[in-house]
Image (cartoon, rainbow, N blue to C red; front, side, top):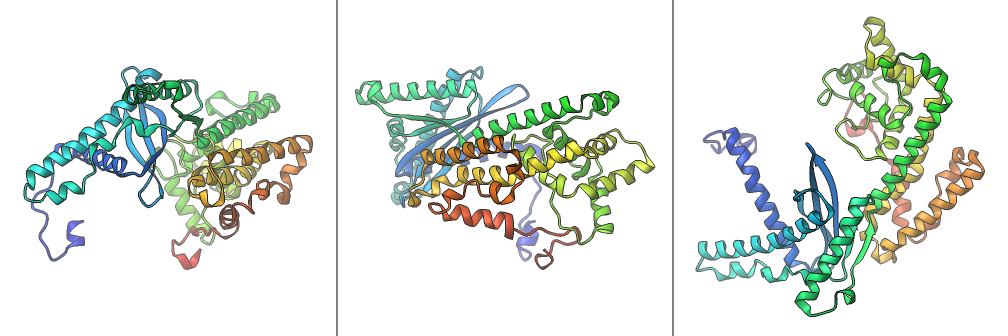
Length: 426
């Protein structure tokens, strides 16, 4: 790479060892945390604290992000730490880990100033470029919004963190803790995912009850399921490229499509085998529904030459009219509901000039609830394109950016063809 970037210079003297590369991870981690501390201290105001938990090898990992108002009044989200390991993964320990990470930022900033001073004693102006560590102060969290997941542990963590912050601010400012204002709320991306996880589960239960007799005739070793999330995992393993599942046939499918359907536009199978959001089941339903004919054609050709459990499972599932109907409904819900709510959750911080803030998300939820009540009373409305694709139309006057984005995504966004990645062939 170095020779490509600088062909006239002999930059590479020695290739680094694997141990050296691993050690550099620690160095990079320290550098990025120090830069986050810089942004934190240099911010005009602190506005938001966000956290989310995941796990790896039965170990709880908590990420910690903050939303800042920069000196030029722009909202900026920065990551303080992506892998906080608390003592036992409980809410009190997670809260303690977040506050400790904040103190670590202060220490890193002070070490940066000290090191710079010792390395460049005759350049005091360099010290002035590094913010004062005292600007990383817990008192700046007063009035911020604490956002988290909607599960019980996350809600307990949010409440405990709020109380801990209030106690530390009160100790520093001699105020009563109850007089310090902190806001607490659920992450709107998590809320949407929780809703659609239950929709997926209800879809699966409904189909399993409806097809109970037919499913009983299918050998259990084929693992045929009616749940979208499981169907998407199977599709990812079989039809995507084989980096995540060596026994899949993604390469062969790609070659088959280029050979027999070269002008077909490309809607990629969504990657879900390595972990996914709950609403990705609905995002992944659209490529399956759209490419159903070609996927079944390819899979049937493969089974003509050799039996394969995963391919047989997919062929049975996707040959079911009921499963196809489920894919159609899921695709409609993705385009009509998931896309607008994703955009609103991800863009709200940029819409202050429209009089739109986090509390304004309630308007979108009211419109969604109203539409679902009407669809429940009159189910064919779900298949009425004019109705279902305009659930959030009342917001367009206030948020023209939302209207522009939906028009782009649904009508103007281009896709590559199977045989070309050239822009002019889209």
